[in-house]
Image 1 (cartoon, helix red, strand yellow):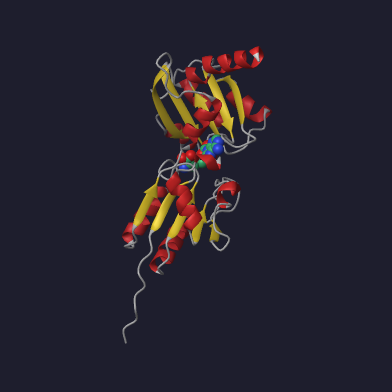
Image 2: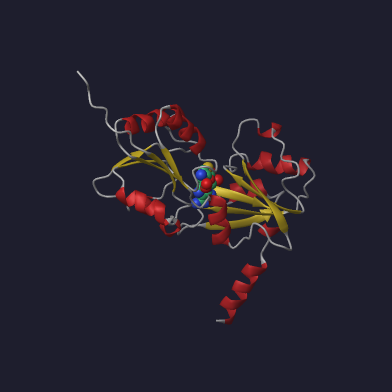
Length: 256
Ligand code: SAH
């Protein structure tokens, strides 16, 4: 007896941006609004999930440092299983799926199982935070190189960040709160001046966003004193100082 084989569904790896639903791409918004099944991680804002149809099935595989999370292998298996059963799956991730989002691993697992994948880019936290805090990541007067690094990685001290921060450069650190002290010590040991400006942007683009500033030497004290919580980004370099833009905005406020 021949069993009919259901057509294989597609896995859409979709970037949900940094939080504000207005920063979704049109394609992401359309896919979310049409989806029957959405598999999302913890960073996706509830306001974005609220765009889904009431009948859509929402599965959380929340990723966060402290809370229980579904292991990556199980997430991969879930996506493959649902797609092989014939369902289209919207795999919704904070920011961009291919920037510290493990989108590569999920795409590989799907390809290996013969499941088609489409990738929809999102506004990565660094870009959303920079815009919201009015910190230009490059600026002809201050920086012509920008690097994104993950601060949470095991073996942080073995990673070679030399050349990524310093004069003319902007370093953006994702997942760096827990290791803030080790990060500032590492960068100073690499020769960075203790007074290099640092900005910490917490919950960028969300209504309760905070932008906090210090020097490189003061970074870990700032994180502790202000009780900074995840998600937050650390921006290190001249552009993180009180920007002209901000001063101008302030002057306008005062003039009103
Ligand atoms: N794929 C995501 C990054 C996932 S890693 C992207 O492209 O943005 C998770 C880290 O992203 C967090 O620990 C934090 O450092 C950063 N992040 C995500 N959303 C953020 C937000 N709204 N504000 C500040 N940092 C954020």
